[in-house]
Structures are given as C-alpha cells and as structure tokens.
Length: 452
Image (cartoon, rainbow, N blue to C red; front, side):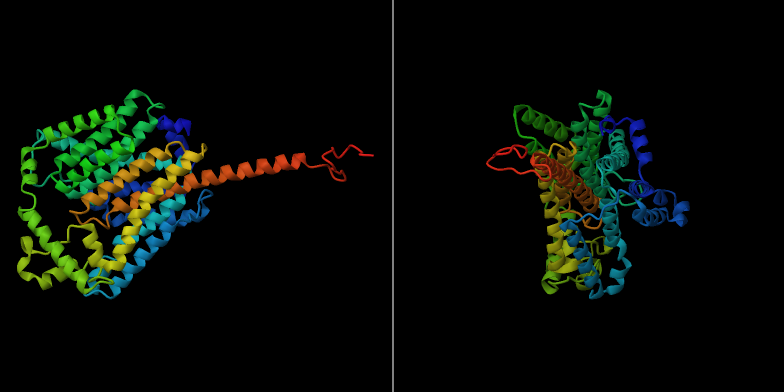
C-alpha cells in the first residue's frame, strides 16, 4: 500500500496487473460510464461495449479469489427499493412508460452489487478510486477550460458536458460536486507520500471541479457547493486558519461569479425557471396525495402532468419534477420515498461507522477516514443540488453508496482480522501457561513439584 500511496503510475499498474480479470472488467465498466465513447462515437454503438464488459465482469466474478459476498443492511434496502419500483411500474397509470425505463435503476442496482463484491481489498479500492478521480478530472478540466475561455462570463446554457449522463449543464455540475470533495480528501491524505506536484495535481482537480460548478449556471449546484465548503470545514474542525481560508475562497468564488449568474440569484423565486419548478412541485404533491402508496408509476410524472394540466406545459412539453424527493415520491409513492431516504441516511451512518472503526483499529486502511469524509460531503452535494434537479436514477448516489459500502466492508474485515489475531494470541498465551499432559497444579505450585 505504501507504494500505491505515492500514486506512482508504475506501482499502480503493477498492482492492477496482479488483480483478477473480474476487477479489470469492473474498472473498465466504470471508465465507460464516465467517458461513454458510444455516445461520442455513434459508429461504436453496435458494439454495446458497456453491456459486454458488464456481463464479462459478472461471469468472471465467481472465479475471483478476492470476491466476497458483502453483508450489509444497505443491500436489503437497495433490493427493496427495486422491488417497490417494479410494483409501481406494474400498477402505473401508464405501465408502458414505466417498463420502457425499467433498466434506469436496475442497472445501478446490478453495478452496486458488482462493485461491493469485487472491490474488496484496500489495494483494489485505492486503484478503483484513482481511476474514478481520473475519469472525473477529465470532465472538470474540460469544464474549467471552457469557462476560462469565456473570460469567466455567463451564458444561459452553462457548460455542456460530453454526450451521456453529464451532457446537461446541471448534471455535469452535480457530478463535479461528487468528485471535488473526494479529490480534496485524497490530496490531503497522500500529501506526506507524494511529490509536491502530485499533491497539487489532485488539488487542481478539486479546484477545477468547483470552477465547473461556478461556470455551469446551475444555481442549485452552486448553493450545494457553498454548503460543501462549510461542511468540510466543520468536519476538519474550525480554527482561525481554516476560517480565513473559507473566507478567502468564498470571496474569490463570489468575485469570479459572472454578473449574469448573480442576477439570476436575485430573481430566484420569480423568474420563469423558478415558477416552472413551483408548478411541478405542486402537481407532484397532488399526485402523491392521490396515490400515496406507490405513486402514479415509475417515470409517469410527465405524462400524468400533461394529462391533468395541459394548459401549463412549459416550453410546450411536460418535464420531470426537478426534485429528487418529488421524483421518487411520484414514481414510487411514500413507500419508495421512505426507502430512498433510508438509503441516503445509511450513507451518512456508514461514514460514522468507518471513522469509529478506524479510530479503534490501527490496522484499518489509513486512507479510509479521509475518503469516508469526502464521500459524505459528496452525498450532501447530491442531496442539496437534487432539490432543484431530477437526478435520482443517475450514477451520483449509487456509485457513492457503492464506494461507501465497499469501504465499510474493507474496514470491517480489517477489524475482524485484528480481533481474530488477538484471540489466537490470547489462546496461545493461555495454552502456554497450562501444565504438560499428566502434570498437576495444586496450591499454586508448579506441576513438576511434588508437594510431599
């Protein structure tokens, strides 16, 4: 692990080569999800690379010597959430629409289980995390460069990401919220192990992620970014140095925020975008009230809204409700929304468990507390930005949750191994103090001494 902490490409590659084919395929699948070459180069669509790689990983998993069936209550809640979505699809107002989108969550459920049962060692986790950050650094660098070329100016469409899950400006912003805190925490951890240029490379990743959020014109993501900065500071204990740093970063962020974006904040609540969201939220509440158990059906919100309020079609069509809780509530009712909230809470509670286990076990991976902290800050970014965007079935929460559960499993195993070794040592110590066969111990005298 010490070699991996240096982030030396040769050391990372040497360790990667030692791993099983199943782990290679999981890493490859993750890279495909973030680069999505089939969306960029449509001539490759016929290859179905993502599906091929996924099934190769699934087939190779039973042969992986490091595979583990990870037992965690999160698994039960993930499965239950899928069951509720299936039930809501079957009983939907427009079932055909629901079944058309059946893979939107099931795909993430399968990927979640594949990750937590394959990424089972500190070495694998560290490599997987580095690849995740590299894939996101490409996005953050692209976003920051685009904003710089504009002279830090404002445009209505924000920053368009590459084709795929992050093409929309708001979705790209949320992915940067998921990436920047983890990059920052990893940079802080590896600082004693790496060259200064490598440390600052990671810090630049966090900075370009924040710059992409500022330039992408998504007010919800920008509010989430401000919260993340404050929360990260609280987690790292406030002191004068930290407070000065927060004030300086906040001032710089506000200073470079385009005037057009500041004007949008001043119009919040009265501009057409805000009024559209208010209409969607009111309609969503009515849908949940009329269908409280399982909602109107998976992905049925736009069709139901268009049928019930045909005179309120913004931009000539009905869109999704622009709120993750409203999205899940209308898709799966209060039952699905309750499970969804438990999954988010489970993410936060696992981070506390990880830090607690690491505090009492010196053999736990030393990077675990930092990464757990980064994952929590990322999750808060998703929750806050998700109040203004419809991203419940995007990779944000599900990849974050898989990384958290996988990390908790690795830390838990380290603690179990420590306890096991300690028990063996105690047993040997007790066995060493016992008399040899046939010997007797009386009155506290050694077995070899005859009391007569």
